Length: 302
Image 1 (cartoon, rainbow, N blue to C red):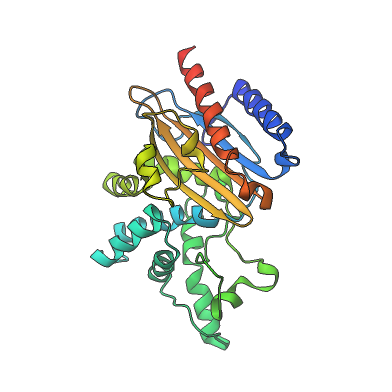
Image 2 (image 1 turned 90 degrees about the horizontal axis):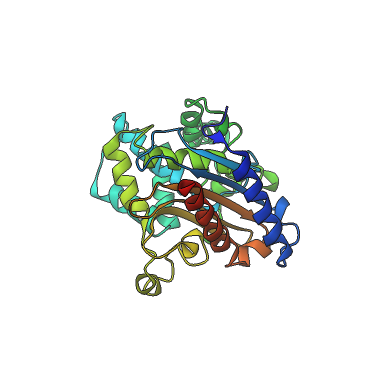
């Protein structure tokens, strides 16, 4: 059972929008995109209380930097269970990973979570032990017993140039062990952060602080890596509050966003788009958020 109530009208609206966007020079869009779109009827909703729809929500996709959202949640869960000791360095790396999407910080975070380090290839018992340790995050995810988490894989670091040594070995032939997540799991975890569930309210508040983005044009121009331009935040009306985590590389342009305006109920939107054409398309995600937020407001007003 989905963590939101399906709405046939929203399903039709999303399908119509995808058809329109595909006709605007995006052949194959329906096969290269996955979406969760959820609208809430309260300004401070309870978990699993939304109304929405989806497109290919269970399709497993390489998440790029969106996986950093999962790793940040894991850090807070480890801290809550006294499996880690908090420190200024840990908090610095969390900020750099989420706010700035630093791959170096993410490498450190994965090491902290799993007790592993990068380096030359390993063999025999040492190699088996290293692999088992790196799978600790996946074992934690299984403990939720959510349908949305079936088959997802969150065990790899994120890279600029690519993995080497034992990290490359761990990807296995054809990169079959690369990270893979669906939009449904991403949406449910982002909802959990925004509704103070799964981990403690203070921990959720810390994560929300790191996920907050400004859509103010002046601030965006001062930060070329703002995770707003070319992503969902760009399509939102002035004055909208945004919490998000984007992911972008040569074959992907993704974003997960929680948005609301003052005195309005929130909307949750997660979009994963694959392929070189979508990766280079800076107008696709803003177009989706622009139109879907308008429909969200119309829904609230009817």
